[in-house]
Image (cartoon, rainbow, N blue to C red):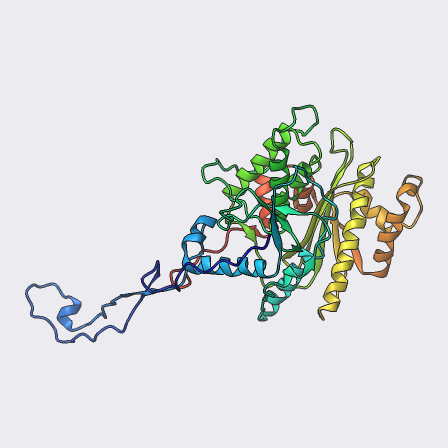
Length: 442
């Protein structure tokens, strides 16, 4: 069923519509310097003719639309509503969907991967821009996402505020692919917590299934997106995503605890600073035998360029490890591969590294295995990882070092930590509140 474009129902913004108020200081009128008549013995500035300019403030209104706090607020603003209307009409004119009766219930996923840039690439470019004090420009191609034909049967609800009054029970059968970003707002009345994971609890499968798996899947996916800038929640988000196929009540409780923690740190984010060095430094750790069900280990790492965090990972290992050294060495191979990719990326960005990458462990056995060329009986089953790391060490591109447990920042990606240590490691990852702005900067 074809859908006609909607006409605009709002006039352009006028100075009388919800303005922002700005206060400026005009030129103060000159004051006379004539001293006042003595009426008492106290010496004042007025008596001796010292004038202090009186700062006068004028109030004037601008027509800049404030950023709406919700979808309903955006609908009430004429400028935002006009922008939404333009997007809607662009979708209709391109034949993005057709209204059809609602099909039978069902969810089917085929290919879920989209070819997008790696987040580590964006952080690397931003780190170089900040360090070099270079200008950066961001652009977007309007409606470029509407030109891909869909071969699958995909349906969606009609957009809120743009529901066809004569077919309000119909749904949209998508004809073309387009970007759909869902923003989920946390409740303002939930109680924040200091940490995102309970160190005493263990996730298992001996509990009741959740009543709404779709909500669990949706929230877990949103938290995965949040890990792009909040590296320290990667471990617990990875844990709850392991049970997407069969979510249970304890998993949902853990998920809600993460949301409460995020609510308490809503203003925190990853900060990038001017770095005095271009040294590539990595920290790697593994929680051996950490899963109580499968006994598999979780490995995690983080990579810094100078003082700026570029890349991190928290991942359940696919095979069992028979020792803590073996578990950590599997993670070492992953972080060496990541640093090799970053090395080549910096070379392509015309900022090659002149020093070896430092890879830090808190397990002495791993350091010995990476440098000792003698083949051991206990390393036969991880021979590929052994030779892969040794090749980079022998070439001088990687140096392996031992770091005390107190400074092993990768611990935050492999297990739940006590509050004091968690807050310290979180700060070491450059995740902080934004610096306070002065009145002149606001």
